[in-house]
Every structure is written in C-alpha cells, then in structure tokens.
Image: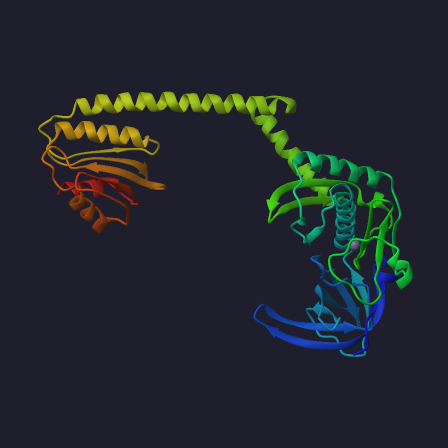
Length: 398
Ligand SMILES: [Zn+2]
C-alpha cells in the first residue's frame, strides 16, 4: 500500500482536504461494526505518543457523509480512519477534521512542550510519560517538584505564552541535528522533526502544534501528585483551562452564597461552620447519652431481656456503656441497635447477669438477617440491614 501523505506536517492548520480512498477494510468487532479507511493523503492526525486522535468526517458521492470517530496508525505506519460507513476504493472524498477538538489538542500539546522544556532547564527532569485525552492532560517527570516549584514553572510558562513566540517545526539534516540539544522520549531513526520554542524548548516531536505560543492562551496546573520516583502533573490550556476556571468560579460563587459571605472570606467562614458543627455534634451526643441513661433507669429490673433501638449516629462508646449498665441490672440479654432502614443497623448485645450465651443470640440473628460481626459468649457486636427492626427484635425475644 502506498504511503499516505501526511498533510499535518505541511501545515497544522489544514482543516479540510481532498483525497482518494486507497483501502476500505470492514471490521466486525464486539464494540460494533466499522470500516478502516485508508487515503492517499490526510490531515487527520492519528493517535500516538499518548495523544488522542483527530475526529471528523469524510464527504463523498452525492451528499454522503462518513463519521470518523478515531484515527489510528499501525506498526507499518498505515493511517486508518475509523468510519461508520463503507466507501469504495478509488472514491474521491472531502475530509473535514473537527477543528475545535484538534485546536484544543494543539493548545494542550504546545503548552506541554513549554512546561516540559522549562522543567528540563530548571531541574534537569525529563517528561517520561504524556497523556492527552478529552478527559485529562498529564505529564510524568522523573524527579520531584513541590507545589512552590509548580507555581514558579506555571508563571514562567504563561510568560512564554504572552511573549507570543513562534513555534518552529523543521527536519534538520544529520549534521545540523548533531549540533542541537533536544529532548526526546526515545531513540529516533529516520528524519527527525525538531520543534523549537525560543529558548524555552527544543524537542523531537511529530504532532501538530500552534504557530505562536500566544494561541495556547493560558496554562493552568490543576493537579500534582507523587508518581513512581517523580511526579504526575495535570494541566489544562486554552479553552479547557477557561472552562475549568469558570466551573471552579461557579462553585466558589455558590459557596459564597451558601455561607452568606464574600469570596475572600469563604475559608474562615467554612472553618467557623465546621468548628460549630463539631461542637454541636459533641453537645448532641452528650444530651443523647443523658437521655439514654434516664430511659434505662426507668426500665423495670424485673424485665429480663432488654433491647434498645435508636436512630443512626449513636456513638459506639455510648452503645457499649449502655449495654454494660443494663447487664448489671437485668438477667437476660441486653442489646443496643442504632441505625435505619437505608443505612442498616449497628448492634452490641451482652449476655446479662445470668450469663446467657451472646453467641447463641448472634446465631439466631444470623438466621434472620445478613449479619457482619462476631464476639464472645459475653458480648457480640456487628452490623446488618433489615426492613423492619421491630420484627427482628421481636424474633430475638422469642
Ligand atoms: Zn510536540
């Protein structure tokens, strides 16, 4: 099969082109049926180097339209356009790439170059993993960067964007290449395409880039985590960065309304609210404990088995203390259930003064419900779900 002319090397800005179909291979796959179409020339950049492919459409015949949902390149460098319909070999097509998607990829990708170039010159680390999908853009570096380092690099990258420097892509000859220091992820053979962005970066790369750094718009780092022996950095550029910032700004606005405070005051207001909730929870817990103490003091000591049922949120220590207090007064089983139908119930059951086996009662409970838990003859504890807790308690009393 003749090689496909790769129009994106001539210009990354070719949005539409004419071509002839050189192959159409039907594939019947578990995910669905599709056609792998090869062309004599294409502007569709295939998925490679961790970067998602171009999308778009191929127009042909009388108003017919094939949707290209993916572009792949195989080990023999054959570029396959994954199409939803068959197009005959020899047919002329008019290709239209999804420019918004492609331009966004060019923005993210060029932003990555500037970022990695600056990381390399400042810290000597290499970008050892790049991933550009519609969901995220990540770079892995073989050295550790702190949050402070990231802020400094981010500002430098954005300054390089504002300088609106030309992004130069060229294929230097072998002699010229030997004189250039360039970043590369692997040993390269054949013609090597070098992408230079002023003094910020020089890297071997075959993907489409913007013509000038200003088109990247903005680069925002949105994540940093330790990864292997270095770090993984999440970035967004251009419109994707703007959308992210808008979304965060919306959340901040909603928080500001909910807390009835200015945006500047959200953090202290949130901290104040959280402290207040912790204090109130503690007070509520103390009041509940008092109430339970009062309730059990009114239970007649002649009652043998005692089972208390309360809503969710009773502290495990309060449950245990209550069960212990009941066990001193009552001959039979003393149990405490806390929970609700939706979230299930936690329980502690003690053997009471006559030392009936709590494990025997657990066996009975397991016959009725799907119980997680265990314990000794003196005390068992665990959790289960049920539709009607009163039925369960009634069954335990029988
Ligand atoms: Zn590149």
